[in-house]
Amino acid sequence: MHGSSALTFFLFIVLVSARPASQRQRRSAAVIPFHHKQISSRQDSSSPKVFNKDAALSEVTYVVSKYANTPGNTKRHQVPQPRSNVGAQSNSKHFDVALQRRQSSGKEPLKDEFQDVDAFYWGPLTVGTPAQPSSCTFDTGSSDLVLPLTSCTKNCSGEHFDSAKSTTFKDTGDRFSVQYVDGSGATGTVVFDSVTIAGLNVPRQGFGAVSEEFGGFGHGPNAGLLGLGFSANSRSETTPLFENLVQQGTLASNIFSFYLARHGANGSELCLGCMDSHKFTGEINYVPLDPSVTGGVQKYWNVPSDGIIHSNRTNGTASTPALDSSSTLVSHNGTTGTNGTSGTSETAFAAALDSGTTLVYVAPEIATALYAQIPGSKPAPPTVAAGFFTFPCDTELGVTSIKFDGKPYAINPLDFNIGTILPGSPECVGAVVGLNVGNGLAVLGDVFLKGTYTIYDYDGKQVGFAALAPGLN
Image (cartoon, rainbow, N blue to C red; front, top):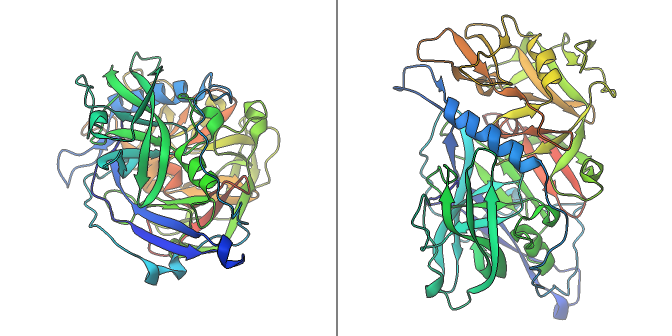
């Protein structure tokens, strides 16, 4: 699994004052900076990063299993949460923590532990009564909370939850299991207990309590996984933690947002119930969710894209790339349109925003057409993996972007190159992979998400994209 750590958080309390005093309720938001893990490595600080084949292959398997044959929207383990009498709050003006810093109530120092290619991002939470510390990966591409029990003595990582010490623990006795095509997975039971993240509490949160992990399922310093997707995609058939916070009326706004820093830098944060305008600049481009790709039921944070744009030249700097006027829209059939032409049926694809995944996965024909624009690119040899591409490490990568509602959002060249094939090799591996993941989706992981500020709007059923503020990433 993926996560552990000391984590800085700021807790913001706001009062919903538009109603009579008797109906007022304190709503909250929490800013959660967190750690991240790598998918490449260095022998020392001065050497080039090297592609981590095992980590990459593990992720490919995970992504295929994650998006194939996802469950329906039945929930055998629905536990009603007490609903707020305040009701759903309009998010036409979302709660901005940048305007509320004076209301912060506490923080812890953040320690960074990983560099190079940032594989996943994680932070702490507490479970049970009295509260026990644990940690989790924050994953917009899944919907379950999964945590190991103290009875898990085989392969479980991070802090283990001791259910015998919690007075609010309830075990349903129903089996919970996750298994992937490479043989890795976890088994346990569906349970309920109090869960708190950065001061935001769900008193009866359902989750998969793991008693065994196998085949490399738990491979990080963190203990578990916290899915931020929709309940229709819950494998434990419980309501996700974020949806429970929404139903309780806990949040200042029914949104969350991400800023992901690069290569060990401080500042990565999940903003629950809020956005942080200090982290972005300009207008927010909201794109509606599209449940049609999953049978009309919303499972993922997926939106329609106009396609991939590539430019062989950049304006701006290596850390802040920008497209120039020669940019082209990569087509499924290998043809291109100039100047970021709007997507067509040949170029557009559905894109799932997935903070629990590192790389970018698109249809093989799209990947082939993209790399045809990069000098010296070719399919990676069998010693790497199918679907990956390589290019000369000294080639000019240009800028690869993905368009949403007519606006391009760039993958930083620093993230596009995920390392040399082998130590000392002149060939490097690209972060965009050709892979059919199921449901006709492309999957946009942290390589893409690091380049933009993203806002996930539950009430509005939309995702917002904004350019990062100057000096970030």
